[in-house]
Length: 188
Length: 188
DNA sequence: AACGTCTTTTTACAAATGTTAAAAAATGAA
DNA sequence: TTCATTTTTTAACATTTGTAAAAAGACGTT
Image (cartoon, rainbow over all chains, first blue to last red; front, side, top):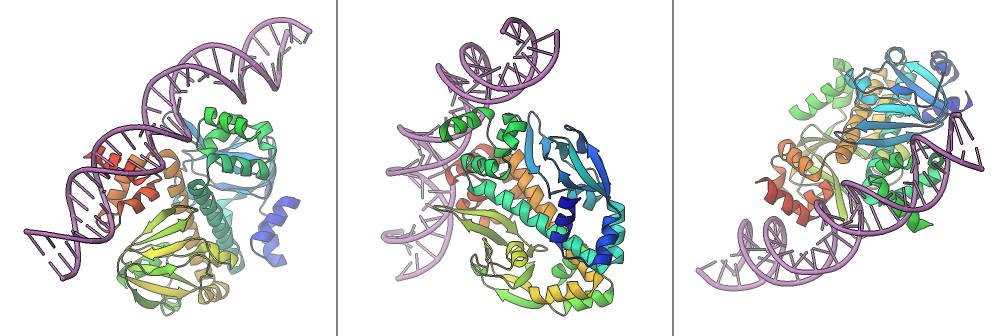
């Protein structure tokens, strides 16, 4: 659980007893490629830490499917919308390869938040960090061209191109697959 | 302080003593239209609750200025990026009219988080709610056309059109002012 | 009212991206 | 290897949006 442990510690420095309180609630789950970890229209009862593997979040529109997030080792899979409103979320999160995840039940998490100030602060930090990541994603989308974001994606997730159809990546970049092909032709 | 009080209570139900701990740290500031509450390249030491008025966040690109957020009564003005990393943020937040704000120093806030579990949970909820708002903004941008988002903006901030140059709104919608004019011509 | 300034709309044209379909390339199974 | 299937690229054309500049409108001042 090396990656997950580091992730948890990096979020907020927990003292040993509180760290153990959290760790003992984690359950290793090994899930196959294409598995839907989070399903739209369902109320989610768990969050996950990605120990190994890659995942994506997508959302179906009227006549298209848009991927708006990729996650890998050290990232968390968490439908905040579903968790906060206690209603079905809007996103699907799918594994792009066989993954090892650590699962944490949200009702356990809420209980921990209510009973331990240290863990409440850890949870605050978890949300704050997720917030600035989302914000960065949003702003990158506003200020960078699809070409710039494609080049960055290659750096951040070098293995992605091997494993994901280009149509998925194109939707993440906000262009059609044809345009992505033109971008690829341009930069090589 | 009606609006701010309601905002604070709505975030997370604080019991009276903890609510007072927070309230007594708030300081009313009245600031004029066009004032920059948050400045890019500066480390921010406060967050603000909008009691009355409208504000916007913008960011300067190479040759353009993009507005990516509007806020009004009940919203908070908070540079999470600057606060979390303790480095200068990237956004400017400008008042679009004379505003009454309640200011809260971030070092006071951190102190409260560390010493009171209730307030740590309030802070967690503050971040969680900000997160899903940002997420919704991001997703709306991916799935809705500029026209749809313009119509929604008219509903959410009916007064905005009166007070903000259309160029600003166009940048928020992700189109040029010419295109926004075309949209406006189309829907009336 | 008349003037200057700023904002918004309109126009004409250019550039970028989308659409559709076909060709080429890659992949996997027999 | 060969064949069938899927994915990616290319091409031709249509549509949308951007750019630049002019026209129209709004606003405040004298």
